[in-house]
Figure 1: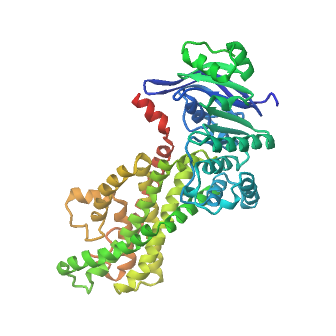
Figure 2: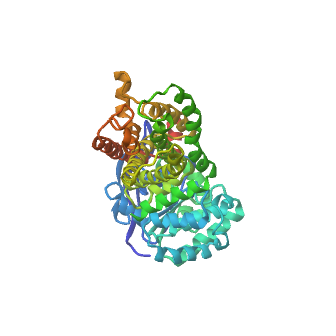
Figure 3: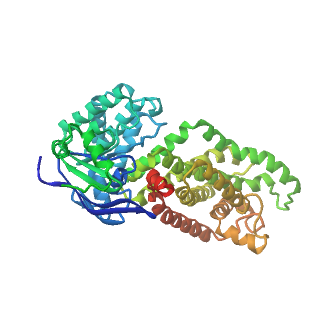
Length: 250
Length: 264
């Protein structure tokens, strides 16, 4: 793991009208790091991801992803990142293959490069047999796998996974995690994972806990557990988000 | 430009798969030809040997373009609803490129539908335009598809739900149709309504089509009313304006979070 910075966030804030969704967030994620971003629903996780993915403009502060500013250099940021949203972004009426082809064109990947890459991803994600099926006929787990394949198509430096397993049954969650771990081993990319399934963050290199738009804990899972003198990340999570006045620690 | 191509190809694929939409877009003008044509023909008097159904033909093609291009822009609302728009907005392309892709998709769909309808409609009403006239008609169809597609995109980009879109479209479609010269000449309308016809992009498309298809009746009250250059310029202005306005509106999306927080 290098010391290059993949994501740099300083004093980032976002308001929606009178509601402060994100407040003075400072964060650095190293290149190649597997970073977990935890917090209860409404903590500001998705808002952060949307700002980092250039879909939302921050109200205050600045953020750089892969060395590019998310506001002034948004296209360069988008070129460097892959993102898997909470809800599927696939066209349900098109087949798996057509969806991936559509994405490869959006990401300006020439056909001769896209074709073998799509084939590889389809095999890797056990989707090859279903490549000509409309997406609407696939199970939730398979759809999510297609979403992830779509996010990896342009071989991004940073992959954002925003609650990738939300709404999936335990079996689908497990097989999806095997896929994500496989991808991690294969490519040296930064993964920024948001989740409220605390146990999913156990394998992360570092974990940040967000509550009410503020960072309330940051460290390796081991450090967080040692500091809070508890055995599981879940206990850390409960301790940190149960007390909204808890101070951020780095 | 690969992205624009990708967006257009997807629009086409979706259109071809929606058989109901495809057939109704082809059938609709003939329903108007039969019912509206039969009614208006009885009160239509032309000394120049022009049958009302012939007079209607350019208007019907304009109607095909209008419905085709506006409905194509509907896909922006469904894309937002289904999440596909997010994937498009997070691609490494400028949002103007997305708007252009969508508008060109509407152009291709509007043009395609107009060509299919024209091959049946023109012989049916015994209009036999020459090659030059057909060329001008094709230009008219393409330009007006682009302008109306851009206008539809502008509307669709501001609308969040399909129900809302259907309501707005009904409110927009009928004035646009009736105040376009598609069914009757608009030069004798009162000043207020005439003003509306000059803002309406369909007016210029239909007028260009009249220049092309009703050339033998040029100079009569039934031929094209405005100069060809003005028609083209107005459609061009509408296209550019629509795209410029739609671009920032397309990206103005923060979805669930924003709505949830605003309610909180």
